[in-house]
Image (cartoon, rainbow over the protein chains, first blue to last red):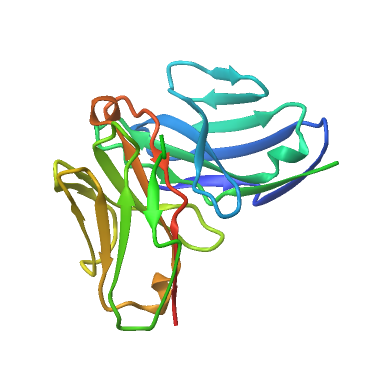
Amino acid sequence: QQQVKQSPQSLIVQKGGISIINCAYENTAFDYFPWYQQFPGKGPALLIAIRPDVSEKKEGRFTISFNKSAKQFSLHIMDSQPGDSATYFCAASMDTGFQKLVFGTGTRLLVSP
Amino acid sequence: DAGVTQSPTHLIKTRGQQVTLRCSPKSGHDTVSWYQQALGQGPQFIFQYYEEEERQRGNFPDRFSGHQFPNYSSELNVNALLLGDSALYLCASSPITLAAQGDEQFFGPGTRLTVL
């Protein structure tokens, strides 16, 4: 019940295209859903996050869509660029004050020029 | 602001040995969390420290222990190393006042531990 399932494992998108990564969770106590971006040799960096009281959040080219009834959320990267090539992780946590993040298994995105 | 720093960058140990990894949190942050990231996997929560005490622990054996110092820096100790302990160990910091809101944890670059 603590798992967050992420798909696809890898993704190749042409420059200018839309990258879509999906995540699903079981634990309805989760109420914070961030997406992290990780480049080789670096730690994960927060990209965008959402809480269940909204169905969509957009920041620049990055959008989170959230479906509370389906317990699913997704990351959309519009106008994908080669510099977006990285590994993306979805995560979830409960608002207990401890901020323990449960991560998905990651999606390796390659944006071809 | 140097952000979250970790040392060493890389470490090679043999089975049965003990290792200590170090983390300095981002300026203004007082809470430190440790994660283990195996190759090709997402980070797994080990434990979190605040006010020099372990506040919450993930599903890791007692061989994994930690410490937080008065300056908020932290150490992760792993005893009796196993081959399966080979991973990237990540430290993340956050300010406790925002932790309840689930606000951002800042991650360091990690320490790559290889157990032979």
